[in-house]
Length: 188
Image (cartoon, rainbow, N blue to C red):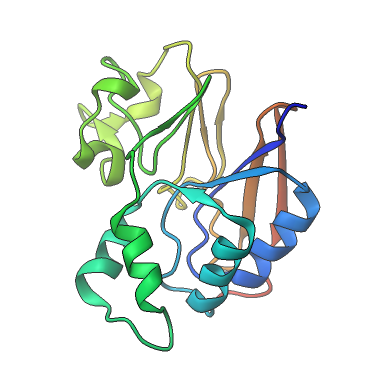
């Protein structure tokens, strides 16, 4: 039996939208592109969904901020912080790759450092994905200002600004299909 894999863009604490997207997709394997808990209304709800559905993730820049500036408590329990600290690899690879910010457009996913995988949108003054032409699809987030960046078969940017009243977008890998749900409101 083949697994139905869903890759989900930046969640940013939007638990209701994540729950709706997971139900819509009915996937066996779910990978989040990072930026999981900050900005939105329900970080604890996101954590509960991660546990309930055994979600996988790569770490995003806001997840690093969570580790550096938040303390365990009502919003996020200690277990969530331990889980975040263990998120490895920085880039998830199968026949495709998942990174939060992106990859080195020339060297590819395997030779991308943490700085580029988590933070850097640009390469030599322009978006990295404009120079990326390798055969492995890179699915990423981290760029809500540009919205959906669909450059398949090379790259696919899924940060469609859910926390700012946009959409939460997912990609069903085997079907090569995008799905999304509308944000309930602008949370920022």
